[in-house]
Length: 451
Image (cartoon, rainbow, N blue to C red; front, side, top):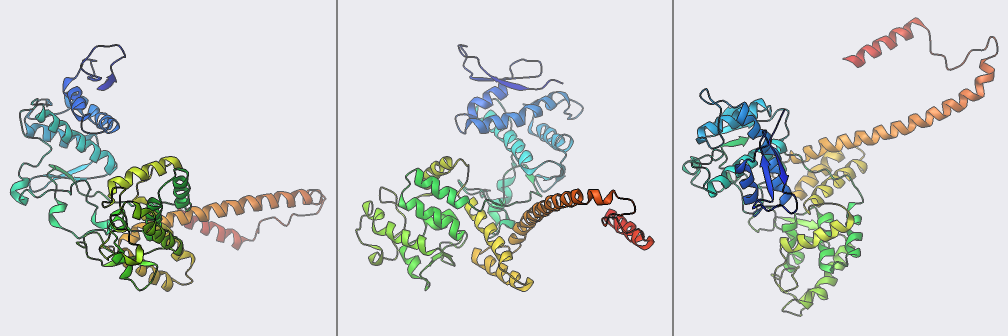
């Protein structure tokens, strides 16, 4: 079966296009080709190619399988026709359930992953945005709910630069306008799954890579904060000298929580070693760029702990640029937020390993929930589900090791008894019990395993 596909122009070919999309008849398909060249000026190459890979099978299906009022749907049809085609594609090809809602379509995922469906929807929405911008499509964007502003007053669906985390993540208050999106198709049962980081040596890999990259004392301190406190990078970069002074414990700092409107409603706790490095940074490296030459004990409360080389607030973008160098040196791709997931996973492991009773486990889990300031206490249960799977893997590995050990012991024992067992009248002590009631018990046992 043919399909749509794309190819880069061969070297030496004179063309206004560096990539051309072809249809199933190997003819250039200009709409997707123009889409690629418009998007490549806005987002990265890998992202555009991912969108193309999602769109090409859809356009093949659109050409041969779509139906609207007894005819095939064209890509530049009226918005209603395209919406019907996208809906049918979601149902027939992506195996989703789609239910009409007030002004939009709700998508319920079945066999396809949320990433696959969301990628497809984002690709189609972006395609029609490009076509409208390039004046190649004369209608409203079929993937946009045109009545959205009437219902929600034009409030944005997501924050600028940062995606809205789902409620199960326990990170934010349920502010109504942040839950809204102008998309005509909305995924309803998109389950959030946290990153479960099981590499217990992960921080040390980052620290070693940082040292090899000749990182600054500032970035070393921030990286240690990430793994030791479980705080978000935004919360760490927002810390002030006064936040340290607000806590009675010398290893704690008051901190804001996402959605707390800059109020310090929680605290973070660091190790003695990180505290020493923090004070050393403030008294040495930080003074090289700060307008004031005061040391840690003399700085005013509102002074930010971390500064850029220009003496301004150290931003997430600036830190991430440096962080990317460390992780590349370590040979891993790691978003700073995953340090938070590593912290929770490590704390959960510690809770189970240091508790003697179920009551102690529950008490420590409540303390962790309070420390993390999760909006939804059920967030921890999501981590526990995946942690239980890891515990089973560990148990299974230990059992396999024991099996191998016992197998070797059995073979050694069998070799020693080989000569004796071959003598007339001698029976092996490895023989199974042959009493009738034992066989009945074994039969019942195996039947129970099938239920």
